[in-house]
Length: 196
Image 1 (tube, one colour):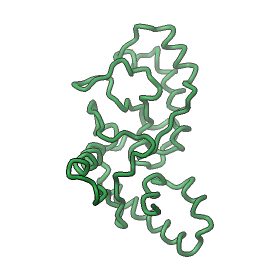
Image 2: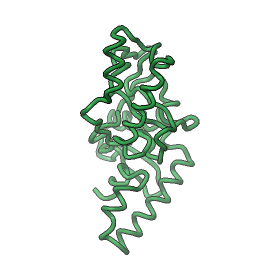
Image 3: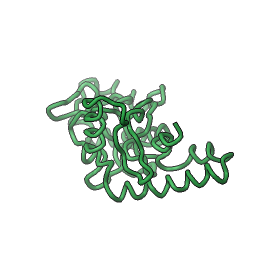
């Protein structure tokens, strides 16, 4: 997952919308009135996330994907008060049976935030597991997060494996460019698990 740090300056269009619509709720998020604001928010999130999906870390165009509520705005675990909170947003891909589409209105046990990957272990074959030294309960939380987001999808695992091979090759043959590679590569947040 992205170790997401939101821009501390909330997009002005979002602030203006909230000021003009103080009683707006979850149903207003998909309204025609909010649509132009949503586009600007998505662009800002895209920048915050370095062009990657917040969950699977695949490249994502600024105008593609969706704005996902990290804490859901609806459902049994709803946080409707966070519907228009910029720090509750993530730019996610619309991968079939994955990421925000799969998460739906559930709370993530591990959210995209600084340190979110510390409990994950990345295998050389691209699969994600819990760190071996974790307690049984902590391992469950890791597996639950991974499975809730569909991060063990075979196609995604194969794609991570390709980038792992590139990283290993660079570490062996061109170690001086590894840091630059990790600034731009897909999966760069989880790839760091191999170097720690």
